[in-house]
Each structure stands twice: as C-alpha cells, then as structure tokens.
Length: 460
Image 1 (cartoon, rainbow, N blue to C red):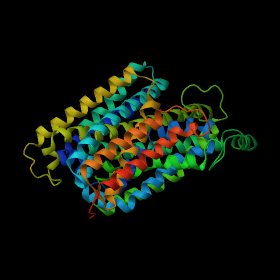
Image 2: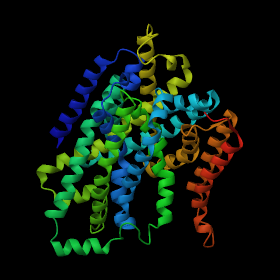
Image 3: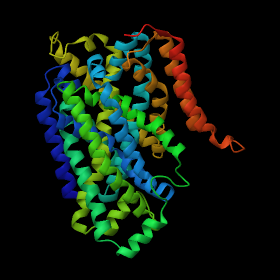
Image 4: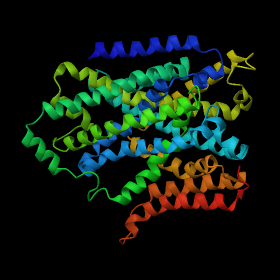
C-alpha cells in the first residue's frame, strides 16, 4: 500500500511540475487561458462534485436514509442540468470567479460582499477536506494525525500553487477516473462476490427504501434541492470549472457530460449506502468497511487511492477558488487583465502574489484542521448558508433581471443569516417547532427574493 501511495503522490507532483511550465500569466493560472476541452472540464466537475461529503458522507447515511442516499448525486445532476440554460450568460458575464460575475451583474458593492463571505466558508471546507484526507491516510499508512494532515495539505497545496488550473484540470481528470473505478469495484464485489442472493435481498429489503421513506420525505427532497442542488447551479466551484472552457458550447457539453456521469454513480452510492447497513461495529467510514469485507487484498490499494482522490479533488478546487477570490479582492487591477494575456508585463509578480495567497490560505486551513479535528459536519453547513445567500441573486441576474446594488447586498446578508439560523436552530416543542430550522431555510430564499424584488430596476 505504501508503494502505491508513494507512486500516486509522485505522479501528482510530476503533473504539477509539468503544469507549472505551462503557466505564463494570470489567465493561464486562473482559467487555463479558457482553453479547456469538454472532457477536461467535465472530468474536473465530476471530481470536484464527488467530494468527501458526497461519497463518504452519503454512504455513511445509509442507516438513516437507506436507498434515499441516492438523491445526493441525483440532485447534483439536476442542479447541473438546470445550469445549462444559463451557461451562455454566465460564461459571458463571468471571467475568473463568481464575484467577477456578481460585479458584472450588480456592481462593486455586491462583489465585495461575495468576496468576503465565500473565502471564509471555503477555507473552512478546505480544512474539512484536510481532516478527511488525514483520517484516510491514517487507515493505510503508518502516520499519526498531524503527519497525515501535513502530507495531505502539502500535496494538494503544492500542485495547486504550482500550476493553478492547469494542475487541477489534469489531476482532476485522473482523480475522477480513480473515484468512479473505485466505487464500481467496491459495488461490483459487494453485489457479485458478497453474500448470496437471498442474503443480499434481505439486506436490501431491510434498509429504508428509495425514493422516499419515513426518514426521507418529499419535503426533505425539496429542502435538499433548495440547499444542496442549487449549489451545483450557482456555486463558485462550478462556475470556476465552467470559466475554463474554450467557449460556451464546450461549457454546455461539459456540464451535460458531468450530469450524465453523476446519474449512474448516484445509484452506485445508494447501493453502497444500503449495503453498509448490514455491517456491524463499523469504525470510521462505511465505504472503507465495505471494501475491507468484500475486496481481495490486492485491490485494497486501488480503493484507498480512490477515496484519497475523493478528498483531494475537492480540496484543490476549493483552495484555488477561495484564494483567487481573496487575491482579486485586494488586487482589483489584476482581475482586469485580458484573458488573451494583455497587460501582462508584470505577470511574474502577479503569479507570485497569487501563489503566496494560495500558500497562506492552505496554511490557515491546515492550522484549522490541526486544531479542530471534528469539524467536518459543522463546516459543511457552509454549503447551505452559501445557497441561502447567493443562489437567488445569481439566478436573478442570469435571468436578465436587475436590482439596486444595496438591495443585492442586503439580500445576500439576510439570506445567509437566515440560512445559518436554520442550520443551527434546535428543534422547538410542538409539531411545528420540530421544523423550525427547515422553515428558516425556506424563508432565507423567500426573503432573499423579496428584497431583490423591492430593489428591482430595469431588466436587460
């Protein structure tokens, strides 16, 4: 296993070194000079989406959700499909990051709010990915938590700051392939080499059903679409992948390819979630326990690397997104560099600045991961808070509607606060009180839209 791990990490370093040679200026680093193919963008989308919470978390939820865990990726695919009609406007109005899109739609004020909120949440998510990566490394390498966290952070921070989007697009495609092959391998052995047909039938019948069950109702699906699926339609990482495409047609094709890939993967994850219910005394991730039970020892390294890829493929994109947003907030003139490389006389200085930002951002995330080793679930609420704050304003603008900047900023803040309250609010007495958090989450979107409507100006 150690040999496979070393080979894998060395391969990532080689990709980083080769990618660094391709980076000449800011457009190269931020969006790979908008020259990525549909295959590269689709691979990066799939790798980014199949992050730790999507795969490891969904499989772990089997005891509670059963087959309904399939909805996590199905909702993600639905969110991507919903983005396709907006792809042209988003691609034309955006440049490097989501705050660029927000500024082009609404002005500098809302951009500043987005530039302040997103990096804070996304740095926390990077820390969560470091935690997950470290715990995975500890299961198949003789490393303590601190050592594993340092190795994990050093690898993805290193290749991200070396080659920027060039590194990420290349490593993401590899990691997407590893993730899918790993999931299919585990599911295949669980289905065909695991318990007999009668035992498997008992397992499937004993778990909560798909599409709905007592623990996952149609209203829960509605909330999942609202707070999770919309991040695939209007999320900063999704837009950062799309902005790398060479043109709008390529971006649309990549989004469609990624959505189509997620659908069968969703059912594989749902099957593994149900299968994991049959395991007893599971320590750590259920998917690891399933792999240990059904796979021959020779295939364990493959699955271990696939699970490590699950985490790294989200961490690198998230790190670059938050770092580029931070850098752009303080160096507005650099965001005005043309994607064809104009005004690039100071390219070396600019690249040095963004690489320092990535390094510092990675160090902060590592420190969070070293101090707060149990924060994955808490930090991932950032997705719901982001959805409550930004989904409505972004889709409002992409629909051609406009609003005064101060109303947009107010909508973002109000939606984010209500969404945060919804995630943190404890259950209150009474039948209605048990749904207080859900009500606040829905209210976040409603209030957000109401504020935008009050400040609406002439549409495009």
